[in-house]
Length: 113
Length: 117
Image 1 (cartoon, rainbow over the protein chains, first blue to last red):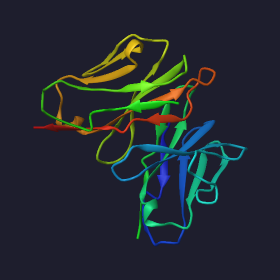
Image 2: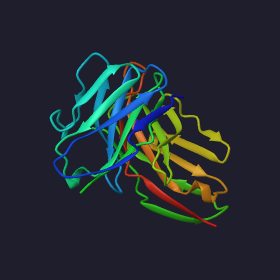
Image 3: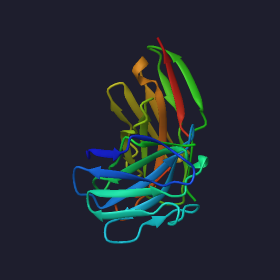
Image 4: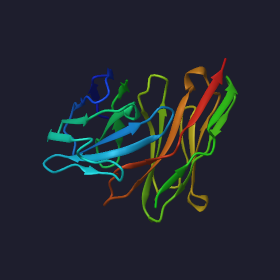
């Protein structure tokens, strides 16, 4: 399995500001994913981040709002830009550690006031 | 389109009871992967099992067992002799088979399991 860490673990931010979430993996992985879990809801994929290429965004998510970086095979960042209270969620990083297994980080709990 | 349905929103049982969590999926793909994850109150998603659509054998791991039936598009999860520590939200998820590998996961809405002492 892969050990995944995320920073920050939680944050309270003001409307209109931006927050960058970091995801660090203890081994090299080809595919990393960013998911959002709104309060009491299921997980929804925001984008897939592959090293050396632009992130692929799911319907309803755009790069201007959720820019992603993937500078190497062990690290990625997700920025939540120009935040509003509707962005209050848990943001989870996930990796495909082998061809089949997918593991999740501990999540970042974001509250926007 | 792919879809995962977990019709049970909440289940409450008393410790030591057996409980089954239902998962029904929809996909047009002939090959795919199915997953179960556990999300305790701490919020982290814990991987429980992955099943390849080629493999319909049921699996048992301690008190956990999974019943995969392609004929009914179901992948149900049973906890035997439940314990308070089993209290969590359980998610079923589906992934396409991309050349033998998994990719993005489509999650069900989750089932909140409360095990009372």
